[in-house]
Image (cartoon, rainbow, N blue to C red; front, side, top):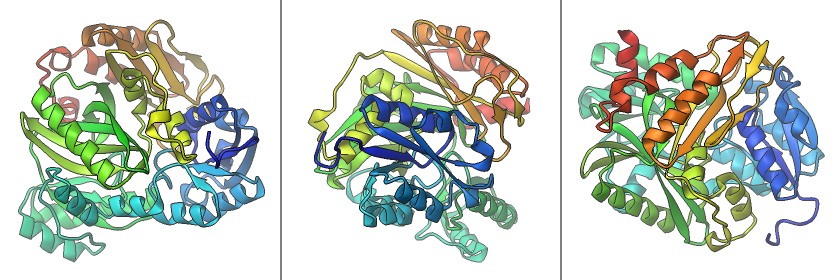
Length: 446
């Protein structure tokens, strides 16, 4: 594997839910030991049961558990963990946490703290991407915490603007501001939302781009200037900026723009000598019109569809690249032509009293729930990911429809009906697909 990985190598997973389960499985496939951390609300969670060791790090609230850096680092120390995988969300893009891990002599399974800080600083990230030839959207000169500073910058850019959190992800801390009358109230809501999630008050602005598609590029780098792109994902179907359905590849991205988008992403990741998995997020308005939004320096929720179409186990690759392996050492398995993921969310907390999840050819399930599992009210609502694959988009969609029909989750309210309505809607099913990032919100108002 590399000099950093030896017998009895131990990885602590600083996360919960389905991504913790996914990482534990990848670590076990490599023959290493696992450590789970958990809050009091998660003591009966699947990731805790699956891990070789587990440590409670705090009460149910996020600030005192999954965002509690001191407790997580202490857990790593007392279990003699050799590496920490942060998953997504929580501390995954916190450069201070990554730096502390590095200073303790523990392997951080992700990019270096310096790169996380650079890409997390939206001003520096935008400057870097512009210099690397990546098209960017016009926006604020610097980030801010004070509403009055933001108000002045919005006036300078011109309404409408997108108000975003520097540390945001998954739509948290993001609001469309149409005019100056609503700026201050929306600022307070967005900043409070992101503070409760990751504790970072910094905000910034971008000029609003009307009715785009959300296209992102998955990359892998080895920290030595070698990198590969694993194609793009279309994440346009969103509710209040939260992704709901994703597919790979995008059947609406024209080939010329695809080649350009992948090329500029690859050039940028090589230029920064990036290590690990990462994602370039773009707004796409048609042939030749695409604009960089941000780079996520972590694994994505929707990584599974890129795995299915590339044949690469991205989570395993992260671990191997952190060990000092190179891109050329990463193995490639069988590939599918298309993959679509639907995120099943719990709309209420409660106990799952009945559960049947679909199986069969072309269906993959990622989850941490089981019959009798108590869905807590404190964390992200997503409880299951249903991934369908196929030779064509039509075949893949049909498999996904059947899989959703077969899914039974009793005891908590879910969005299964919404997912089915989306994937059978003519606007979405059509080869000419008439959706954009605001389409679902508009449909839900009708």
